[in-house]
Length: 64
Image 1 (cartoon, rainbow, N blue to C red):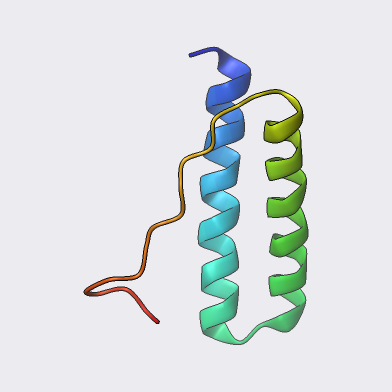
Image 2: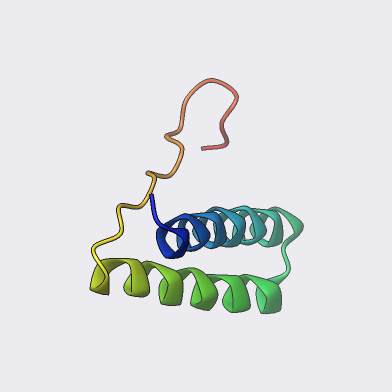
């Protein structure tokens, strides 16, 4: 895996985590920021054929 792909995947995971934390905290401003960041990273991944790890599915221990 090249450095670009690895870094982009890491940024996607971090943005997803930050977005979830903002949603759980009810911080709408942070939610908008992290949603935009995640969208930008996902678009960059798509444009560069970088495979993105799927989001965790809902299940036991996961919020609905």
